[in-house]
Image 1 (cartoon, rainbow, N blue to C red):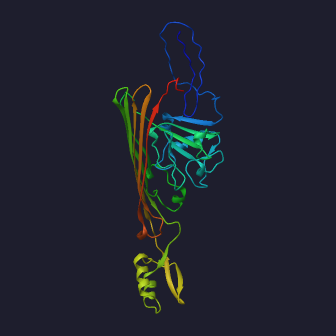
Image 2 (image 1 turned 60 degrees about the horizontal axis):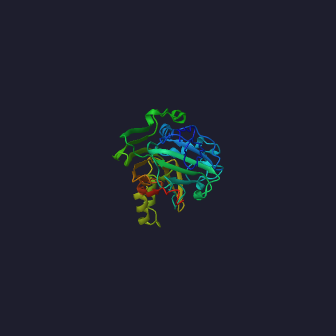
Image 3 (image 1 turned 120 degrees about the vertical axis):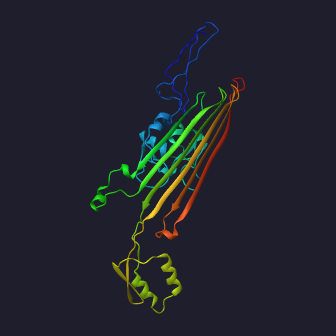
Length: 353
């Protein structure tokens, strides 16, 4: 048949593209060219979808925490910020609570079973494509009634490529809050955050086996104060308690061990009818978390009909739990998350179909 060129066909995640081509009888040789084109209306399904590419993910400003590439979905119609209402991860899609969202990585379920949200997060730099299905999902997306988020990890190519990046937030780069200035403070409280990482990809066997990897280290350090004021007995107050009858000296010793005396008194309380001076004690607690994230993707083209795809993602979080009001009760926290998949794709002949 003669050469025929069809342009303007967009191939996107979760969409079926149909192209009707008429070929004229000609010579034996033929050429098929597939090129990126503007998105067209998908007439094969009623589902509403937004798709974002790797460049959009890389250009997205990214804080050390937050939702990462999921924030791109806010550019879609029917998607809005939760306004810190409710729980769950990601934005509100179609008026649903974030707890109704569902997450996938390369088509593999990425939903936690204990609380709503993804098991692992993917760095912006490692995202090849992310899509959001808003409604009218196909049966394969029957997990939740909210948004269906599918993140595709980058793959290696015949060319060796990589990147080194740093997303930086620092107290010295931010303006001082007016509320701080009104109190005579000339510096911001500690807030130092970095998202350091690197990516690398390339071939193991040219045209056959490809590998891509990403590693990032996210240190976050800041200062925190308890939500409510903490009051303690002054040294004079402890001395008064020490000499009172009917007081358990064992319990008083425990109280003195964990609750230091206030430097000055600004209030009083009564114990057994005796007035005891008390005062506020300042508590500025450490607040830090260190994240270590890495992923590996491997793609092996065994033949024209068989391909093997492997993915492994690991997130490690080390932080401190300073929910208790007193520093002596702070405890370290450890959270490890892993997601792995191995898939084989086989193309069956039209005869078998």
